[in-house]
Amino acid sequence: MTSLRDAAMTSKAWPFEEARRLLKRYEKAPPAKGHVLFETGYGPSGLPHLGTFGEVARTTMIRRAFEVISDIPTRLICFSDDMDGMRKIPDNVPNPDMLREHLQRPLTSVPDPFGEYDSFGGHNNAMLRRFLDTFGFEYEFISATEFYKTGQFDAILLRAAERYDALMEVMLKSLREERQQTYSIFLPIHPETGRVLYVPLKEVNAKDGTITFDDEDGREWTLPVTGGQVKLQWKPDFGARWAALDVDFEMYGKDHSTNTPIYDRICEVLGGRKPEHFTYELFLDENGEKISKSRGNGLTIDEWLTYAATESLSYFMYQKPKTAKRMHFDVIPRAVDEYHQQLRAYPDQTPEQQAANPVWHIHGGNPPESRMVVPFSMLLNLAAVAGARDKSGLWGFIRRYAPDASPETHPDLDAAAGYALRYFHDFVAPQRVFRLPDDQERAAMEDLAARLESWDGGLDGEALQSMVFAVGKEHGFENLRDWFKALYEVLLGASEGPRFGGFIALYGIDESRALIARGLAGELAAPKG
Image 1 (cartoon, rainbow, N blue to C red):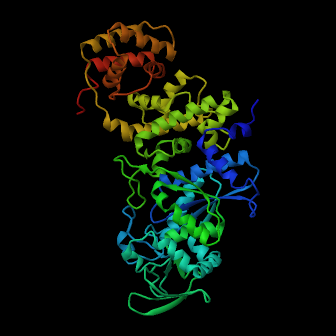
Image 2: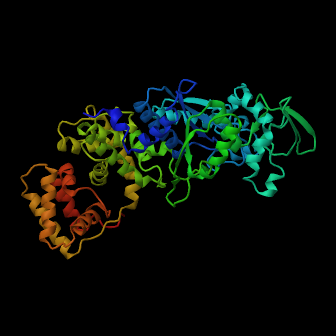
Image 3: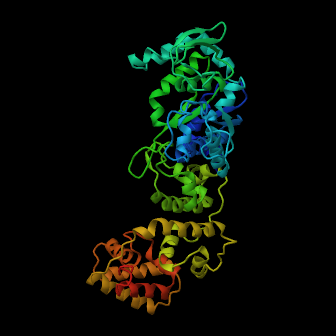
């Protein structure tokens, strides 16, 4: 039988493809530092969003894939560029007026508008770490402020002063002529105001490791490039960080892709070896616009976790990273159900199939058993008709459908019931539009209700589905999708829905007959007074 490592060496799953590419980096000799270093970057100018999470999730998937095909140890660093100057005030924070006087100061020198941490950068770093810890990621966190101020970046900064002209040559090629006149790779932090200054330099003294410049008031200053008194512009900083840490792999969004040659060359000029890269497509909001931390559009991690478990989000991140994705609430139910479909399939698969199954990558090769005996989409429809206010109200139906299930033995199903109620009340209920059936539909539904009255086949979802299917056929629905669509629109107020036989089995025979009667009587479509 094929081993997992053998399967991984030929698997077309993208994490294994990336892991094999990374392995070639060290096919001649192992890394001198003794490990392969993965890095993800975070710009804490705003609260972390799902794109930030996705970067760490996907990098972790590649890391775990690499560990299957190689015995070289690995590390993952999450690097926060929190010395970046605050260039604008985010839309989604309290006390925005308080922040105005701190514009252009490093994010770790800006007060926290939430009043919880010693700085705004500290707050956003804490939010990122809390989110990542929720998902159980193994990572090491590095703050740029600490990295600069404690001297860990000093050697690279002094080398940047020595090779200033070569670095400037790389950068100036990418800039418009007007910008070239004032550009420098070094940004001094004003000793008095604490602001990050975008000013031309009068001198870079490689021997002393200093820069000289005039501030906005025309006063001349000389500062050492070390010790956190000067920071690098963000593009040079990217490549310099790779050189300083000896990074082997970093992924980033497509909006960075045109800068990749710049990052690589900066790294090489500073004596480093450029890492392997992976460029993913961007996340879009419901209107097809790019998600932005400062605008706060699109889903947040906390919002997703209000309506579904963490694994469903990891599943969503696994899917087609090279394809742009809409990140809106309507993607959640499908992600939940598809994740559990894959989980149920996993135990009976071959090593080759398991290596290609998203749940292997989500759980680092050790996926749990799915206990979701009722799909999330079905729970949503049950919430629509059961009138339940809490998940215990749904469990009465679930127990009858699956007598062996309980909140204790099926914790994932229990959690999903609570998520489904919240999702239904927040998103489905406000959008429901019921209608009355036409004559053909009415006759078919009356027939369905009559057959249910004499039904003796128990709560067998497949048998009930076949019976519903037969009713539609006998009543002349050329396209049976129209029949099922009519059931959904008349009885559930939606144009799409679950396998209707499974829904009847879950909701109950008598309850389904009563629901049909209410739909035919116009009670569901009646205006709510």
